[in-house]
Image (cartoon, rainbow over all chains, first blue to last red; front, side, top):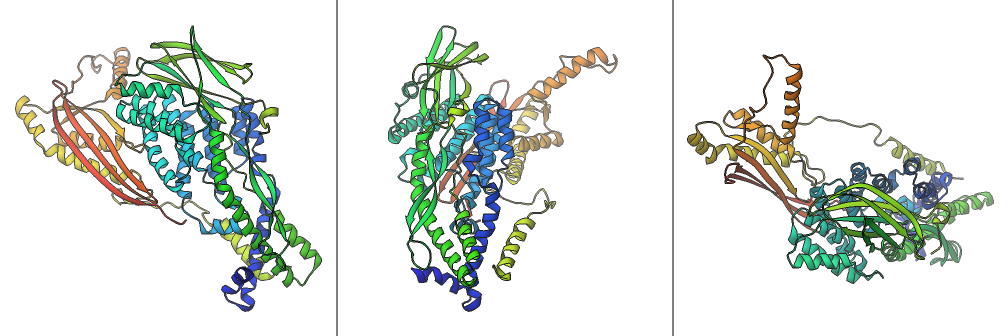
Amino acid sequence: MENVVSGISEISAGGKQGRSLPRAIFGLAALAAVLVLPGCATYSAGFVNVENATANRDLDGAVKSLDDLKLTGPDETLHHLNKGVLLRLQGKYADSNKHFDAAKSLMEKLSAISITEQAASVTVNDTMKAYEGLPSEQLMVYSFEALNYLQMGDVDDAAVEARQFDVKQGLIVEKNKNAKYLSGAFVRYLNGMVYEAVGERDSARIEMKKALDGYKVQNSGFPIPQGLKDDLRRLEAGKTASSEVVFILHNGLGASVDENNIRVANPMPGANGPVMFSLAVPKFVKRSLPVARVVLSAGSSSATSEVVEDVNGIAEKSFNDRLPTIIARGVARMVVKNVASQKAKEQAGGNPLFNLGADILTNASERADTRSWSLLPGNIQMARLALPAGKYDLTATYYSAHGNILATREFKDVEVKAGRKAFVSDYFLNPPAAAKAAN
Amino acid sequence: MLSKRTWAVMLAGVAVLMLSGCATEVKRIGVEEVKDLSGNWNDTDSRLVSEEMIRDSLSTGWLTRHEQKSKKAPTVIVGNVRNLSHEHINTRTFIADLERAYVNSGRVDVVASKTEREGLREERADMDLHASETSRKAAGNEAGADYMLMGTINTIIDASGGEQIRFYQIDLTLVSTVDNRKVWTGQKKLKKDVKDAKFR
């Protein structure tokens, strides 16, 4: 094994020239440390301002804080995903979709392998890799875009998103065959509504059926939405939809990823470093969900919400599936860094100051990849209130798990057209101090 | 300390990172030049559709039949072209091409669309107040359309691994506003094999 790694240095040219490769790797780590150290805080720690402003309903402030983070280069996808959410929450649906589109096209581009990024992730750290989003995050983009179009009253474009989702979900399942949680049940439920709105009743029925099957296999720990079952039964019976308000709540925040230092055995101890490595790995931190249920009312009519997507639960499963690969890459990285560091130390002739510097650089460049689409909701709730055509003032009341009223929101002059659905959405986050509750 | 060589490698790396993409490069290309970047619907697709539709609709029998029957040029209005595809497609490009071909052929009259008409009506109402009597245009003289142009764009996508077969079918129809008869249907099919890059 030792020969394999130290062999790297000899492959290039052998002799004196070949010995410079560990130093080049070490140089790269040193350079990365210089670049990374000034912004030493992890991504998730830097994101707190954005989350706090969002929780305080200061969305302009949140957009500013997000822009200040200057998420570019490998983090560009995260900028678009989070900005898309903030603009959506502000009701700037068209602008929001521009960012989601940009995120989607980056995700497509990033699905190709970058040799340089792969090399950097094995020699420096995982944050050197461009963020392409967890598969579960990639699926959620389609639902937000569709919702944005629906809230703009543009059902044809929402249907384009539904069709794109179908292709994307197929490809994601192809790559993650055992990941039942990637069934996209919620998005399909929504897409069923979209297809029905554009008059494609057969597609609607098929999509609702797939959603039902998806909820069953993903086994998320919440009941299959009754609204979905009713819709499917109605579509199968060939009956048309009645007019209604569909209320969507982005409830709480998705998981935060923290940095966690674990100790793993060095597969090549001895001359190439310590017996145990300290490895920085990401740790999934679930955040508490503020709203247990929503009651949507218009005059004397009211409806209670159902959980339609456990975003947190799905993200956790997606994360856990990736963790073994992250750890394996981390171990490989520590081996490479230690070999490079040892070789560099040898060439420096045992200068103690250099040795200390080398050890610091080896560890300082080690950072866990704590990036995630932080502004995803923790879960999504949907309340469906059947109403005859007309204009309504709606009230949404948010209840905690203990039955306390957390907030009441008014939505004025919501127009419901005959036989159509009117989509309304809102979000609720815990106040900043409590936002980062332990799981 | 680090050798000169190591510093050189690091500096070269930094220089490459900083210098690449320093300025935006613009090169003008001909409108008929085919350049496929992502595999999505693009200008070439739109042009192929308009060429086919123009050729087909001006050469088929509906036009002569109308001319023989009513002894005047048919009047067409552009209705809705529904996008039932997987992409957000701008249908106005090839519809505008078709409108232009109709008007310039001198054989088909095209009347303004619903939104365009609203603007014109506002202008006429404004003329009533502000224009001189000789140049003022009265309401109620609009030309009614004989036919409405409608259509759909459909796609079928078969994707696996890094490869996609994209099939587009564009159907346009001229429907008589008198009796809903379809007097012409045009169709264009396009197929693309899109392979994603494995490396970047």
